[in-house]
Image 1: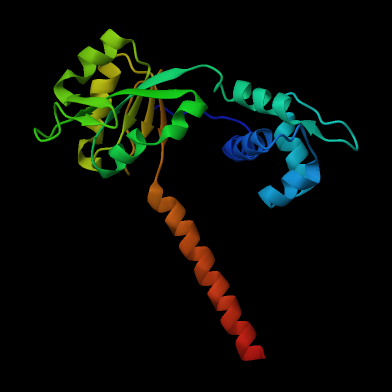
Image 2: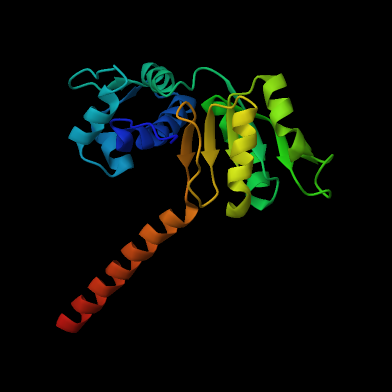
Length: 220
């Protein structure tokens, strides 16, 4: 299991982009943002912008716009990013190390406090300030630290074993970067990220774009 249906998923996926734009505006001293400006930035219609932001409970003032500070706080609250969540990461390879080094997670209320790996070359080292522990200790330390979120960055062949260890350690939410479906209890949530999925969409769009340009060239 591990799948939880969430309504307005496209909106939720867009909210971090709104948050980034709004945060940059606040740093620049902007206090009010109008819907047309957000529509241009997001490349979306103004109606979609209003519907997206409505999920946070904030409504803009007609003819004026939204208060930037209020909207930032509302988005963070809706996404539960105003509360700090601690996580552990398994797989301190290229992808795992990159995630450990990404400072932006702190802004989203996520703190990766420890990393785990099976490689003797990595165990006992530090990656971006986090100690890398033996994966054999994952369940024990996750339970001791009372961590509820785990991040999987291991090859697909080892992902299920890691997930089992996470569940045994009391982890209730798994962010899975391995290209495989995991089997977990009903009370554990899994969010699967398939990096190749984004590449697939980009490739199809590029192919159609180029095909359209070739057709236009032939007609000309």
